[in-house]
Image (cartoon, rainbow, N blue to C red; front, side):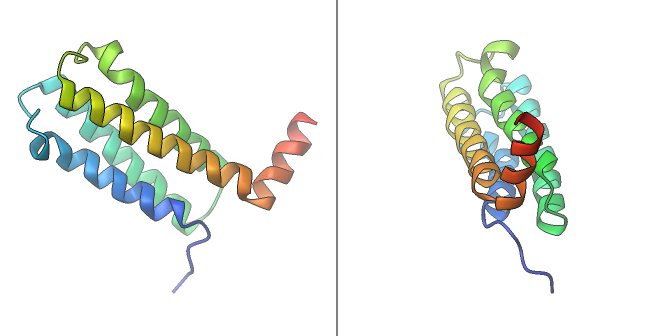
Length: 120
């Protein structure tokens, strides 16, 4: 069995599973746009995290950063910021996803070296 390179990737996969379940756990399943967008980002997060666990690439972490930021912006951009549980869930979970992915990008020596070659 292959060893996972970054512990943050399985945590992000669990956060993706949380996003799929959270509309029912936090009782905002009746806010359709919040439910659909949260679950969709959850599915994408599970997919990118599973890929990162198998084949660690910097672009997968950047995709997680984008997903985390999209999750945090979704309540305002999609108009469900009045649904407080959905808003708080998006902000907290999106912040965690973004922070974990950035952590991998700055702490992995291979990713950091590639970034230095690119910018500098």
